Image (cartoon, one colour):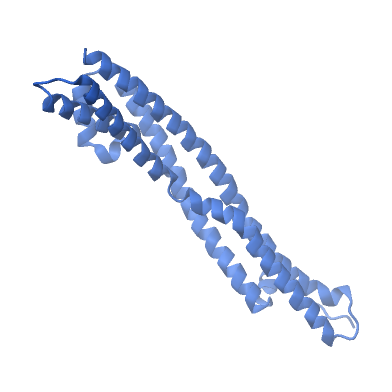
Length: 227
């Protein structure tokens, strides 16, 4: 009589070799951590885009720059990345004008303002890029980790054939199925990480372009005001 094997997903995991189970556990941990980063980054980029659009509307509405600077400084944590870039540049411009009131060197003041905005721009990008390297690593490494578990499981399954007089598909199938689950879990961890990494990179690049354009446009405004 042909023996029957429980080929359910949970049964295959519980009956897998210890090394394969450890690899599955590692992939599960990587998947959970990457999903937490995906949701956190999704909300952070949406908030940055919304705050950037709000600040652009306020800036180009033609209000007083000093009033806008005071508002951005008072609400620095909630104002958004573009407002913080503006606050850094405008603050440096005001301090530069006050410090060089006697011998006004507007070229140096404008350069200082531009450097302050560039430094703030880089800080904001670093914050937006946080944890993207982890998603890239999970996306590139997880399939190979799963493949390692599959190879180990298949090796263990074929080693078990040594004690079997007649090797049939029914005997080999459970061991191979257990091993292939590792590859499936590896792909389950990798695919969302790769998709999220590509999407977030695209969104951050678009925000960076908007930030760079604002730095140049605001520098031109300060240059016209300094004449």
